[in-house]
Length: 473
Image 1 (cartoon, rainbow, N blue to C red):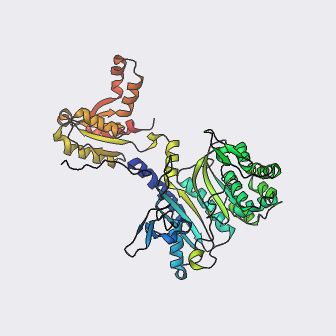
Image 2: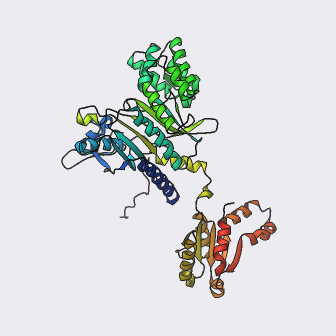
Image 3: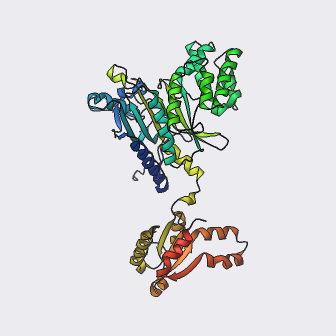
């Protein structure tokens, strides 16, 4: 009987990440946590597992213990689950250590979270978050601090001012606007909130249909609408469109005619004192987020283009006053913000040229006797500030050059018998070689340009020539 060989396959919804991706995410985490700590937030690490009943609204059904989370039963028959986010563990920690903690308690954290949900494009079952939370303050200033700190964190992570926007809303003000429009039925309210939440994707016309009879998408599927009257739809859409086009002060004056905006005025005042302008943070009635989770102000960080068009959310948060209260049986207000590390890294990578990464130099021992000398050259290169490695496989010259290509190296330092004897190195500019091969019309043109691609120099001149070859183009 043949030995069983398992099929090498990766579970759906999970990803393998290599050096460049890991380095990008690590840089974001380090930059964001540095901002959080500079603002006075204390680092906290909690375990990957929590008891399932501590996960709040993510508590698994008794008949389906893995619904929404990855759960298992401990030897004492209690259900444990991998954490769904970093906030539920915080709520448990605060409740467990309530008397010993300063109030408000300011905490920051970073780490992976797991969600047992259907995976899709850009939607994974494991990803990193980087959070900051203030537990024990009901002040709008705590929400404003989160928003201002989110701006600082995004900029520290590499997002320039003008390339992001924090959109702010509050559930209480939205509810008052709906009541003025005559929307009082809970099911209708829920339908309106779900419709508004699609404003970025469907635009004015799509949301208008979802507020009314419903909408048929491109595939022909029909989504039933909230069934509002034309007058109610016109009133809601008027506030939505006019509000999103105005600065914070104008928005507050307009909405203040029909709703209590004291909390939003408090948020705006603190943002002004911190130098956060309308382009960085603005009010937007289409921001909904977590219908069952958030209890007050909500905010979402979006990457935007020069025309203000959104390229997607890379973080969000808001006020969640009920989460810690579940454990203590008393009101404990809380607010927080979370950076979606993996999503932000992917967005930044898409915006940057891959060549912006530190170029790699690979030292190739074409002659086996050159291996020790190759390590010496690699050490010299690293000492001069270059990323450098030595090829350690057993293949010949052609395969070694293919290896350097697969490593996305910019320069190959070749050390063969002739180089050893002459105390020299041959440098191949792989980036220039690829460009030459792409543009050369024929063999003659290629041979004429090779002198710019490959040269042999004394070993003492290696660093200077590598520096020139790896310089930004």
